[in-house]
Image (cartoon, rainbow, N blue to C red):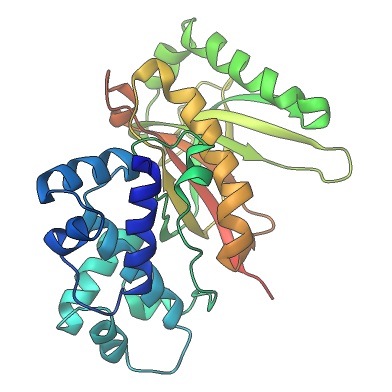
Length: 297
């Protein structure tokens, strides 16, 4: 039996026993590994320590249970959390809002089992479980440069990378970051004004600004509507490999996450990629993908 098969066996066991006590020593013994070896191999395949994986899967199932009218404490106790406060702290860390708020958006659909071979198709090494945070964000304004493109024949997949190359290889970046009223020097790549009849949309590279007064009139501005977002963080990678990881994460979102999430894109809102200082790391670069969502009717 291969390591992949053995770790998959362990994942399946975890999934079937989430409401029971689990520990590294017992899980390792079940597939004939020493605890230390199991810990290292599991982390290499799944992208996180085994007990972190257990905690996240418990939280995912607890999140689905929030659609019921049961007390949050009772749900927490089912999945090994001893107090309401402890459950809330863990839930906040993963989902970005307390369970009471998440309950407003929760889907009753039970999380699908983790299949290593399927997730590896998207090359999400270092981040096999791409569980989004749910965040509510008020409207904000960006200023920057805009590209009109289309999804026809995949033209946007050519235009947008070229647009970024032109931006980064010119004085545009320096000029944009020198503008007044910048909230923070975090870049946004935003899809706006999608026309579902013509398949055309506008793509912005910009920065958040607190006020448009004093900006270079050559720059374009846009208001991003308030929304509830599912926020995905791409797996850490070398800086020059960030773009493929972003595309692979998008593939995961469309092909794996949306079909089982109980959510759909929120009409009239904007999805965007967010590049903060972490995207500049030489060996652990990440980006965020923000998807505006509503529960399916």
